[in-house]
Amino acid sequence: MNNDEQISDKLLTEIMELEFEIDKIMALNGNREDAIVQQFRRFIVAKQNKLKKINHYEEIR
Image (tube, rainbow, N blue to C red; front, side, top):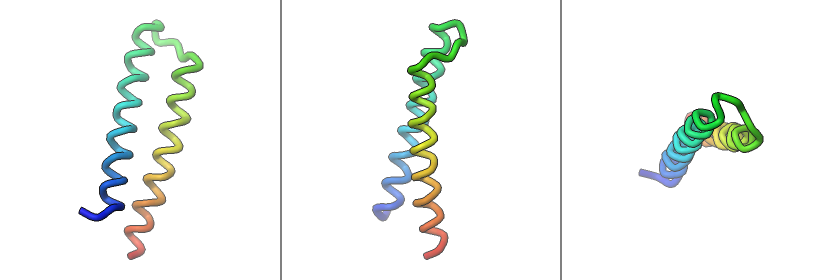
């Protein structure tokens, strides 16, 4: 497994963990989105963008 694959796997794991945390927070908040959930969603988008760049780079090679 090369470095890009390891980073990709790590990013996927982090995204899944953040989504799980969002689900827990939303359950506690009565399905209302608060500032923490919004921040987690921004983290997810940033990680997804990084993941897309890594995967696109791998496709080119």
